[in-house]
Picture (tube, each protein chain N blue to C red):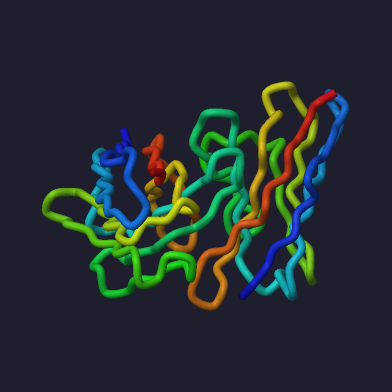
Length: 106
Length: 119
């Protein structure tokens, strides 16, 4: 079955850029989705189809996908961006989530 | 306003059954595919099942295949998950999520319902 690999945690200084990677075999050939989840809340879609932002998601959130790595970037990081972030792809006949990355804003 | 409200969670013994419901409102339910996603306490997200808008296509995660059944009633704007032969590892918050058009991801989620499998 298809697997996605994310770092367990990423730290970013307030106002700087956080980058979260999502590794998978030829993930660049798949649509990648990114979800933000804050404690006690349901996930929120922040990026779809690699790099598109749903309405209401700040431009500070951007995505890219090539080769074996997809990346979510959060520019000008704010305290409110602290959350768990999950990447997701559609495998052969199932969705797959990465294990999630905890983003801490210092 | 799009709303998804799950219900039916609770405490059940191992080997027991439970039926979850997801009531949808604020959009044309019958034109959207839907997913169930779960999250064990302190763990990450796990996709459970998918159903196309007209129920013509259904998929399950290997971990629930043969035990769980997804279904929907478009006339009642409702999504269901019948869970049989429950195990301790099925303990989780279960979310229903709407699948946006044109591969736009799970764009709306409910707040989840907790299922606890324990004796």
